Amino acid sequence: MSVSHITTHVLDTGSGKPAAGVPVTLQMLDGERWVRIAEGATDADGRVKQLGPDRLPSGTYRLAFDTGEYFAASGTESFFPEVAITFGVVESEAHYHVPLLLSPFAYSTYRGS
Image (cartoon, rainbow, N blue to C red):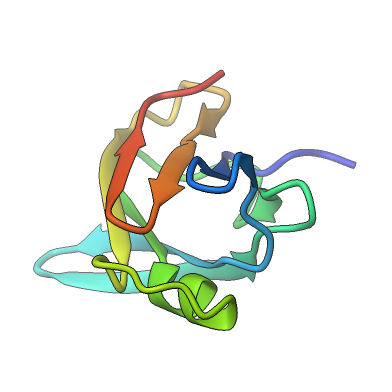
């Protein structure tokens, strides 16, 4: 099985565990509007391995994480109902891994490998 061009991994740093069940949407900027390319949810290990096609054209993309739904499911108060990470894709690059480190009142991200 091939891996999609974009993957993500969400870790709940507040609990010290992978964040399972976080809804994630991959979008591409088309002119002035965002177009949905794919959607999924994190697995038990906090990963989305298949999110969109094997290859994407160069452009500006965004991963939108429904963090409000994730925290509400556990009855946890949180500040950010959504985390949107916008990044550029160069078609010649084989793979983009965009992790999210998440807690109820903070988040961080980086370009993974």
